[in-house]
Length: 190
Image 1: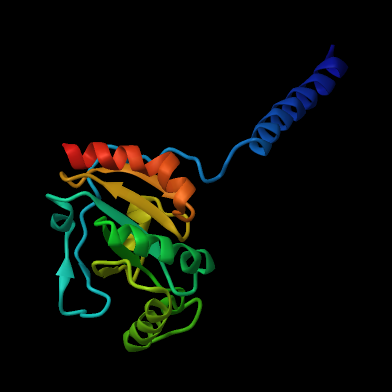
Image 2: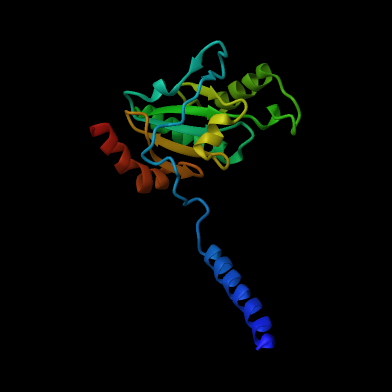
């Protein structure tokens, strides 16, 4: 009996692990439910990227439907996404950037705020500027509170300041049409 249990236990563990890993092969890492859906944006007090004397709070989301786009100049996919976001801005969508820079992190080196501002001006000068303004998430506190896993990520926030949609990856015409457009129109109509 003891020999059977020594064989069965590892077999059960192996089968369980194999099933878990097999499911991972068919899951989309960009499709996970945000724990913030239908909840208010976490509270914050963060500076404007280009004018650090100006600060923002969750009050910026009250009264208008907003796309909150997490991005950085170091993000290649963000550069691909910005021209489409510019198009959405030109259609009247309110887009706010949530900017954080890897190089301000001591693990990656130290960069001044002025240097970050220059890089952002240069990048947005090349690609277009879809943002009404950029919130500077220096320590990534808001990004962590939102559950951001990388850039780009976009949150659709309703007029009451609640997260209604979360997308990991770039916003492009297909993603906008298939995932955002109908929800955005419903929120505008509210």
